[in-house]
Amino acid sequence: MNRKSLLVLAVSAVTLFVGAAIAQTPPSPADSAVAYRKAMYQVMFNNWVRLVPVTQGKVPFDAKAVQLRAARANYLTKMISEGFPPESAEGKPTRAKPEIWTNRADFDQLMGNLQKTMAALDVAAKTGKLEKVTPAFNATRDACKACHDKYRTE
Image (cartoon, rainbow, N blue to C red; front, side, top):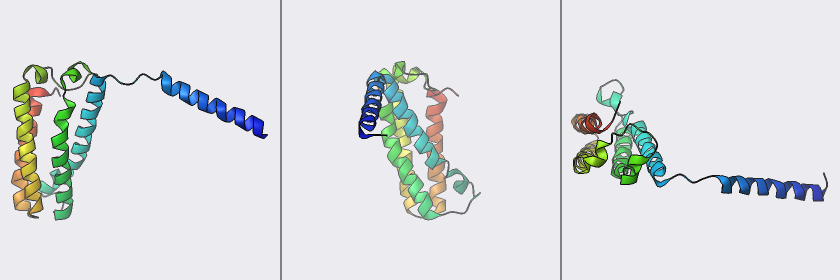
């Protein structure tokens, strides 16, 4: 292929790419918030689920691994509430119940309880002692469940 043909091919490819990028509609603020929320929960879940078998005695206690997972989950928990702005009530379908937005003070309180228990789990993990981690984990699990029972469809 000669230089002129390569140049025409390159310009055509760039033109098609730019045209396709311009043609895409950006997500609405509601859909963007929903995507953010789902991503935060997925990453938190991936860290949380690794703590479950440890606290159940099904896998050996690895203090460093538990500290890492608890620290990550704690950090993410502080970010999740950002994924529930008022406009996200109208976003793509999710398992979030509409009552989140009509009972916002109660939802925020439950989210605050989750953040407090997750912070306590992070502190317990830093002790390097399973006997401190397990009750803190259970309290955090109960805080998650309290919110899910009230504001999430299964």
